[in-house]
Length: 309
Image 1 (cartoon, one colour):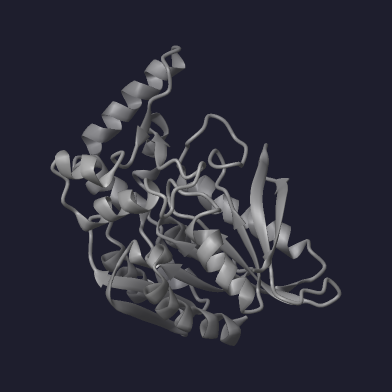
Image 2 (cartoon, rainbow, N blue to C red):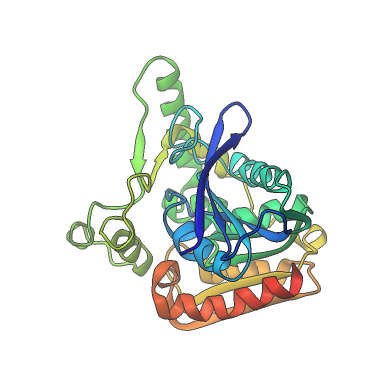
């Protein structure tokens, strides 16, 4: 096991909570490459971004910071369960601020990795924060596209009207409306007629002992979700995303769209050094924690970061 430090650092007007994974034989007198690891939407640092990818990257010799998003997990910020892409990207910048303040981190060798929504947030951050030297998106999902499509039942204007009404009601004193992105169990999902692989496998991960964590709430504040509707994680990638890029996806597409988003950002990125790895026979949520597909992914990710950090 890597040495894990539980730390906090200042964000905009609140503190961020994070786990700092240190490599074996860590010596604070040395300097190390460092990586920011960003969790999925509705997730937390104790799940795939930290316990899987953070842990294994630390074992490979990197200092890794896995943090909780603002308004979520153990991080501060009110009201709770806001999922605002601009703030999520800002969270990555503050995580980098913390890393480069550490005397044992080489500020010229800072990478970034993210899973699911965190993968696309990582891409967006790298487009305008070129302290990120190299980046990896693991089964990355463009939350803006997902909001405009599946999460609004392909009726984004109607969804925006409902969000506007709810925010007005809350401004007048109504209770916050927190939505759960997933059913309570796979059985409940099937009973409700849900059949999509991503929805059912997400439920299996988040709602069972397999991946369940107290802060992995899979929740969002409806009245604030409008912030994502006009957002594109890959905006200006054609001209501004120039850092080395690795995209990892499974070849079993589901409703959350990581397969199509992976190919899209791979195509749009201006990066001269870019590669895409398709884990054949594996799905979006297999890449969260299943040993075999994660091993396939890490066999690409570790050499990629060693080459570019």
